[in-house]
Image (cartoon, rainbow, N blue to C red; front, side, top):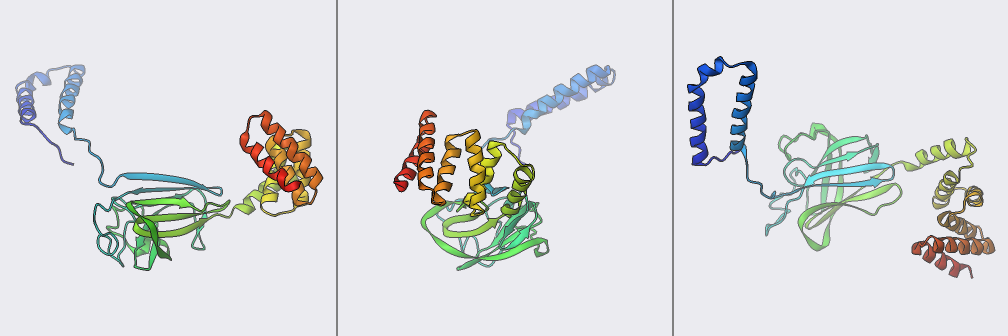
Length: 311
């Protein structure tokens, strides 16, 4: 770390040291309380010499997080800019390990186990390295997250290596960017974009067994009559093409006991899917009226569109 001193500060420092030598004999005769007070004042005087000028980072740090299924995925990285330079093939050579950003290694963390390139990756943090190429890249999840960039990188620390195609972007990205795209109930794409190059890889999680186990535990085995739990179970069964008749049994019980505009709307959709058009029309009308009363224009519109398909 660099410290900057003015001539004036240097003279003050010499003066403090000179006075300390002059009064050293007196210092030895001080009480413990007075000694501590004197030392505190001396340290406070030196703290002014360690000040630095605050300036923007050349490659600012960034942190992006995304819930993927039931997993929290977090990426911490630094964002360099092109600044008129040619990036891939020059600043970042082809065929060499790159830190996938700037400064320290880019780190990706998973709160639960996930699948990357078809292989299960345990929960934890990994350094995300890459080996750029003209038409494809090699991406690396390394167990060593403590390196400064790729300095000291060793392949023996690799947990996973996989290849992905490199594509061209429709616009120029002046600053390196990592983002999450194409979200589904159990997956998301991680996109790396810089200059005119884009690379994507998929993260997925095994959501269905966890959700089905919860439905069995809290709804089926417990014979639940809770409207909220019954709605959640019906919602998951319907949207994931499970047993639609069971979904209808649950949503009917939920809405008969405690009708809400969002639960009744689901009932209407399930009835429509079962060919129960008259019942679906009545449910959609009821949901629309409840949404109007609750001043929720989104659900009013959803029900209006559903009603048009049922006429």
